[in-house]
Image (cartoon, rainbow, N blue to C red; front, side, top):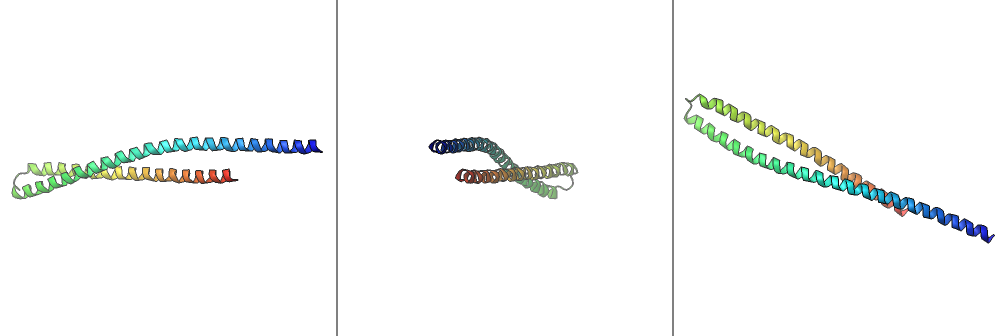
Length: 137
């Protein structure tokens, strides 16, 4: 009877070791995936930061262009007899409208990237919590 009990314990220990190895491999694979996702998130954060900087610069330019348009309107009020200014003003207003549109598009893209980063962060948090629960089991 001692032989069968000893063999049963040995088999149970071998199964336990196999299970622990499997859990460790899953954990290592999960950690590797988490590192890859973190690297991707860092790249996304860099892109968002660049977009935000570009949007800030465009907003500054837009503000300057609007000030220039206001000054042109004042000048036009003084010199209404020059028809050439209307063509220039129209072109300038088109440029200002185009700049506003580009700024809005960049804002939409930045918001989309932010949503993706939030989703990845949530997925990572869920992965870590489920990995912790598996390891505790």
